[in-house]
Length: 321
Image (tube, rainbow, N blue to C red; front, side):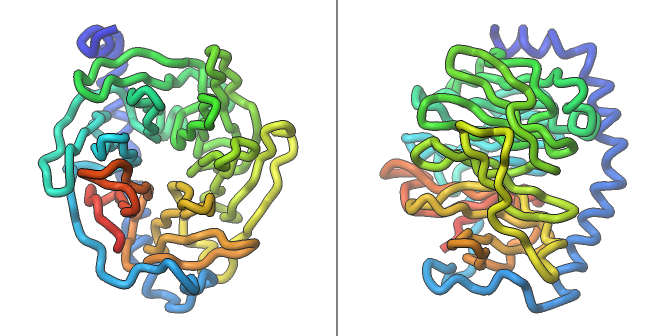
């Protein structure tokens, strides 16, 4: 399906979707106000500085998108792709300092994005208030397949809850989260969709262990923490790490893994990037309020391997040094 054809199928929904997003705006404004106030409310955090591998310099802005950037991913050519929440577009940034280019039109309230082994993108949709809170009972959201050069869009899978996080396993299985509910969705390489493969409260960021045996999921609110879900036993998620002190208000969001397979977590109100070490969390970087996702670069040019990047509600994409 071409992008034009895909957009036509959504024309009748677009005005209603925009209305829903506008209705959410006051709540988002309140969240932003709280986020601006909370970091200063208590200087001590339950997540101390990591003993090694911490940022030693101020983050550097490498790109900016005029929208809430929900998620970012980098392909083997070192190009970054970003999902814009309000406009519903997918952007490509060819290298740090280059102008972001919208490669799609409005394809929905975008959630997570990952790059497949063949270079094509998987993008979650339905990450708006309505689909998020009703996604457990009415899983109608789509996972889209996007061509990185042409921007051509097609439906990869449907029948999922409102998609916030997206993770890709080594065997090609895709896992998704629905923030306003409890469900973890799964799409197998042969196209089978299970919208409620596992259950975790307020699931947000998601990643798969390097060997594919576990799925890691961030719980964002009420009792924030990190879960491990055995792929062979999804009915029994295991709470791995819980937050404490002021970090119960940190609003952890996106999740990625470092070279050693340790989870890295972006936070909104704490303004920190956390790393899971053993059974505890420590802080890799600070001074990054309203962060939504972190990802590592790939390849030898552009957003290159070994570099860590952060996206945020403010539209800024920064390199964490």
